[in-house]
View 1 (tube, rainbow, N blue to C red):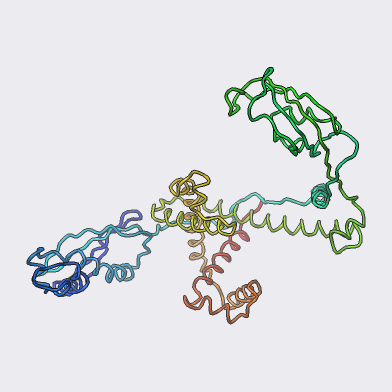
View 2 (view 1 turned 135 degrees about the vertical axis):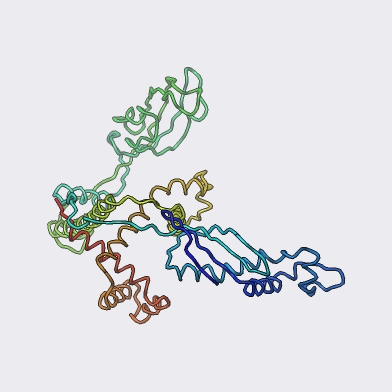
Length: 428
């Protein structure tokens, strides 16, 4: 087999492959062995008719297509390897010549990974990301914990205020007529939640248990029920009960209840420590993204559609896995949202293109700086995985040794490359 790079234009190459007569005829014989059971020839049991008889009845080229497929399966990967090409899509194959006496000439046109030029990526100016944790933020987080530990009490006296849950009966009237769909009994309405049309919840503020209240409101002009859109109506409302969340006092007893600390000040200090750690981690992640984005903007590259489609495929697989963790299948998601996989692919296209470009840039920096994973890096990574998976290190190594640890080596090298870019960036 003879392999030749016939043409390279942008990210598309043409590979020439020539097979001599001996190789082609061998492929034809193999094709016959694969396909002979498909033919019913009078006088022969199915699959037992000689090759020459089948060719005589169906034509000399009856096995050519399968023979070419066999040759491609064998030789296309070898051609890619010999010519040192990084292909990113399936090839389009054209048969230029085909003859049992002279052989076959094939041309495969395929997209390859684009070559990028990158310079001035060290010292790139990027805004520094800092989001310090303020005392106000700690107080807000403390208020959330306080709210989570509140208890609902039913009031024997008092009036409806914002955030109360009022249990009500109501009936809606348009003029003198009660309209359909505007009636309910024993409905729990959270005041201020915006569950009802504007003005309804506000009108109940100040009402007492047992009160009858006429609520005058106007339906929005774009209301889904056309006969009510823009109409002024009256809801006759009966307040059955009022429930309110009672919050615990923010004191040392509260701290003991919700934490391992004996005083509120100790609990607040620990809460702030946790928030600072979370904020720093979030800032680091955002800073890495910002630096990578800035470096990527230095590059102009035409990305083959095959690479984008491949990334979209991966994004859809990841999305499907996320749905499964939530107990939902992808098909069910499409059914519930009224969307299709084509819609999802369209939504993911631009993000996929950005991801591909980012990966190309990181790979280029890794190559230029000769960044690799050391043995120490590998051992540290194995220990980290072992701790996360609660397994011994040797078991973790066996998970990755099938590809000679290439996956984990590449993961480490990419992370080190991003670290390198951040460390060498000019953070303003």
